[in-house]
Structure formats: structure tokens, C-alpha cells
Amino acid sequence: MKCKVCRGPAVIDLRQHNANFCSEHFVRLVRDQTAKAISQFAMLQPGERVLVAVSGGKDSLALWQILRELGYEADGLYVGLGIGGYSDRSGETTRAFARERGLTLHEVDLREQYDYDVPTAAAVTRRVPCSACGLSKRHLFDQAARDGGYEVVATGHNLDDEAAVLFGNTLRWQDEYLARQLPVLEARPGFPRKVKPLVRLGEREMAAYCVLTGIDYIVEECPMAAGNKHLGYKDALNTIEAQSPGAKSAFYFGFLDRAVQRFADAAPRRDEGTEVASCERCGVPTTSGICAFCRLVERTAGATPVALTRKGKKIS
Amino acid sequence: MKCKVCRGPAVIDLRQHNANFCSEHFVRLVRDQTAKAISQFAMLQPGERVLVAVSGGKDSLALWQILRELGYEADGLYVGLGIGGYSDRSGETTRAFARERGLTLHEVDLREQYDYDVPTAAAVTRRVPCSACGLSKRHLFDQAARDGGYEVVATGHNLDDEAAVLFGNTLRWQDEYLARQLPVLEARPGFPRKVKPLVRLGEREMAAYCVLTGIDYIVEECPMAAGNKHLGYKDALNTIEAQSPGAKSAFYFGFLDRAVQRFADAAPRRDEGTEVASCERCGVPTTSGICAFCRLVERTAGATPVALTRKGKKIS
Image 1: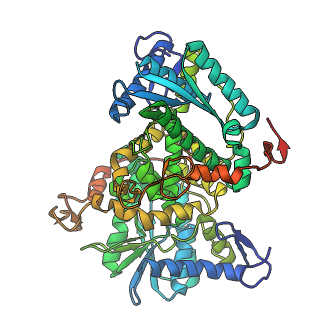
Image 2: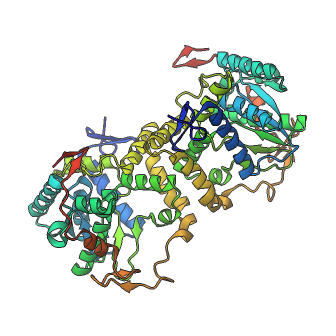
Image 3: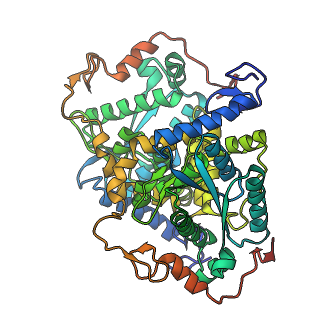
């Protein structure tokens, strides 16, 4: 097995590229593919300050490192979600990564600053934990970007993530979600641009990149996500990918090329029609009196913290 | 487990309906769902003569029986594909079904009448066998309908089939195929209407219907289809269905409700622009001098018949 670029000994085979790579050229490929996505979708402009949403996992830590190597002024934001020992370990991993590299890491802790955590919010709202978690993170990323003067929030969503979300939205033909499933969401008044520079790279590539460049990341998955539909969609697409290498990439980029514009009229019109006011609590633009995040904070106020359990057993 | 209708002992549970049924009410449900699809998509008009494409499998034999019970003048057409013992057994099963019920069955045999069979055509064209098979069947169904004065050809495609085809077309965002993936294809000059009355019913329901109404069908799958992508798509959707009962139905009918019209402009315009001539060999409308079927017949003329093999071993 020889590297496609230098013919030296290869360390990884990429079936969708029908090629093998040595460590040096694989690491370069990952960086090049990130730069290509940034350029292809006009994600970042020179001189913009970027806030990277980091979780301690392989994707977000690799993204932070690559953006720095590509010359962007990229700082990190870590949100403590209060998901037991998983959150403790994620935070420690993220802090160590930033400290060792001398990077600026901002932190928000749900329990300390807002008096709730994801398991408690899920119990109070009686919805899947991913719902309260996503709502909290979106709000806090936007707020941190505004407070810190960042034009852009970058997240570590990779091709596997985006293809699985697309698959879920396609299975239900949720046209309003399909219309908005783009690797760039443009800024609107009060909200920064959102970009996903890893959309050209899969989970396997990102894990290999971390191993080969010495990034110590948290391998365990969020215990609250176990068994959720999103992971089922990933499994189904992995089965298809094994049968037809490149199928995931064709699905996601084919959608962007030939389908997403067909759904454009289903996108909610944010800048017309609905009167946008400011949240009475936090001041963020919202269409109702109090924004969804502040309503969640109010609903969870005073709730007894919920222990993290799976099938009735406490876990950490 | 009690029947949802009569509270008698149930014989089958339908998770996507969250209900159980006794034999009598399950058989009625299958018939009612077929009638509902026919009405919902205006598939058949009273007094029209219907040609049912029958293969000897559960779907097509059940469809033929149900259309007769619903009062349609439905005759059968069986195409001998020359796929070894599988074709022999399919033909015998179909003939016995028609004979026992006193139904009119037309037959075409590829080897006898056109001097080729599907394995040989696949070898000569160097394409997957499903390609030559589909081309042959479409041509022969159309021709038999014209020759016999049938306004409509009905096929036994069920929800699992249609959802799997939709999934394959969606994975590649093949907009011209998506635009045409409808349960009814309207007649055009020289071609009958094509309808799929079983789109509201899954494979499991059709197999149960046959068992409960005493239809003796050929259980084995086509040996040439084993391992094809279509079966991979079915597997992937079955995994999703097990996780979310009703997902397949939501995928297919959501597409018809909210997406197919978004792809309409990608459909090939059959009635405008391209000049349609008659095939020099068989007279069927075609855009080239000789139709695709007659070209296949010419290419396979004189070819040594290919034995049916799998992994190098002869099978029957």
C-alpha cells in the first residue's frame, strides 16, 4: 500500500478516493479539503475573527487546529452541558488542548451560569435531550460571538453528520429544513454567520487526522445521544457507503448541486413579514416576547437536578 | 392480540398502523388499501381493460386476484426471462394460478420468440442483468397491451419497492428520475398507462395476504438480483422502519405530497421538441432509428447462451 502522492508507505486507504496516503500527505489532504470547503462555499474572509464551537471531540479540536494552521484568528468556546462525567472529561480535554497550544478558550457552564443542565432540561421539557442541548448551544454560541466581536461561528460538523441530518430531513421531506441545510448560514441582524468547514471530510478521516497529529480528544460519545435516530441514520448510510464507496459524498453534494435550490421557497423568511422584537429577558432578536432559551431557563428554574441514567441505572 | 375491527383473535400486527387484525379483516384491509390507491391516484376507470404483469411472485399474483375481486377486467401477462430453473418454476406457478381460477394468461418467451435470455443479454451488453431485464419487460408489456387492446398495464410494485427506488434516486439526486417517480405514468401515443396499485402496502403485508388467501406463489428471489444495490436500499430502509414504524410510508408519500412537483421541470418532455419516429424493426415510437429493445435483440443475435452462474458455480 503506497501513498498516492509520494509512493512512500501509506498509513490509510480512502475508498471514496480510491487512493492511499502516507501520514504527511494524509494530514495535508485533510487541511486542503478544509481549505477547499472554506473557499468553495465562501465561508470565511481574510481578517474575520472566528469562534470555534469546541466539545473536546475529534471534529471540533481538529477544526480549531486546522483553522489556526490556515492562518485564521480562531478562538474556542466550550459549553459545559452538565452531562455527568462525560461533560467533566470533555471540558478537561478541551482545556488541556487549548493550554498546550496557547490558544484562547472561552467557557460557559449551564449549571453555574443558568442553574440547569441538559439532563434536567430534558426531564422538565419531556423532550429528547438533544432538543434542549441544541437550543442551548445555538443561543450561547450566538451570544458569545456577539459579546466577543466574532463575525463567524465555526462548528465541527463533518460529512457523516451532514449526510445523516440530510437523510433524516429527506425521509420526512421536511422542506423547510431541507431549504436551510447549507454549509453556510449567512449572518442576520444579531446573529453571526455559521459555517461548517469539515463538510468534505468523514468521521474516519477526522479520527485518523487527530491520531496522526497527536490531538488528544475525548473518544466516548455523548451518553444521552445513545440510540437516537441520528445515529440510526448514520448506521444506515454507513451500510450504503460500504456497498458503494463515495455514496455519502454524492448524496450530500448532489443535494447542494441539484436539489437544495428546489426547496428554497420553503425557507422561513427571516427578514420580511414577521416583526422581530428583542427578548424581554436577554435582548436577543426574537419573534415572541421571550426567546426560546430564556423560556427554557425559566421552565427549569428551581428544578431538582436529574441524575444521568440509562435504563434506570445511574451512569457517569 | 385482538383484531382492531372485530376484537376476535388477531393473526397479524401492523406496527405502522399500531393495530392488529384477524384474517378476514386483514384481507379486507389489503383490498381496501389497493382500492384506495387506485382511487387516490386515478389509476383505473370503470370499463378499462387491464393487463397485469405477473411474475409468479406474491405481489403480482395478489394484485391480479384483488383487481378481479374489485371488478376489473384484468388479464395476465407472463414474460419468460430464461433465468434457469427460477424462470421455469415462476412460469409453472403463474400458469397454475391462472388455470385454477379460470383467468386469461398471455405469455411471451424471450428465448423462443427473440432468441435470447436475460443471462445472455447481460453477458453480451456487459451490464447488470436487471438492466436488460427491465428494458425487455417494459417493451413487451407495452407491445402486449397494444396488441391486446389494453388501456392500462398494472404492476405489483409495493411500498417497499417504490421506497427503495426512491431512496436510490434520492441518494444520487437524479432529478430526471425523481420527476417521473409517480404511482401512475400517463399514456402517451403508442404506450399504455402504467399503474402501481400496491403502493400503499408493504412486502410483509403482501406475503401475509397470499398465505391467508391461499395463493401459491414463488418464494425464491431472482438469483440474478442477489446482492444488487436495490436490495441494499431495502435493507437500509428496513433498519430505519424497525427504529421508526411508518418511516417508509412517510418517505414515499411525503415525496409525492411535498417534493415530486419540485422536480417537475427535470422530467424529459416526451411530447414536445424531440421528433418521435417509428422503430424501423418493430414500429414502436422511438427517438432513434431502431428502438432500444430491437437493438438488444440484434446485439444478442447468435450469441452462445450463457449458463446461469453465481461465484463461478452453475445454479438453477
